[in-house]
Image (cartoon, rainbow, N blue to C red; front, side, top):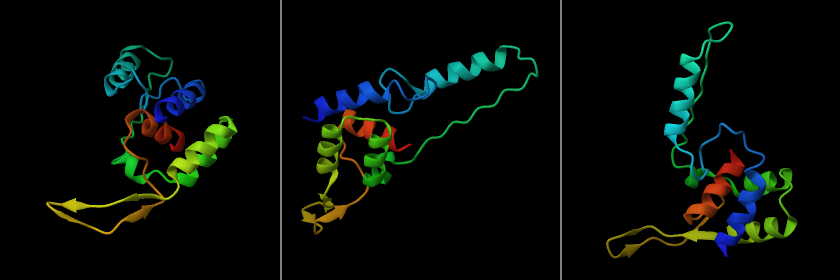
Length: 128
């Protein structure tokens, strides 16, 4: 089910993200950004000034706030049924830490998307 929802979310957000954004997008990479920077630096501009900002968030899946994701979905006009499903999917997420054969007690999380690659990537791009 995550793949279906991810595809629906992708269809909406890909048209709303800046063309230059590479993070959390298929067929985009750091190399794309480096090539854009190289082209900008070698292309003369009227004032010969070029600026660039590259942001790399450490552990983005671990810091995504669920409420922010749902708010961003509303702002981007994602269909309500997809918002409801995603909010339900994120609500009450639990995890444990296991070292060797010992496990911690379950912990509830209000941040972090599950690590289903496509679904999490789209959720992270919504919150940035």
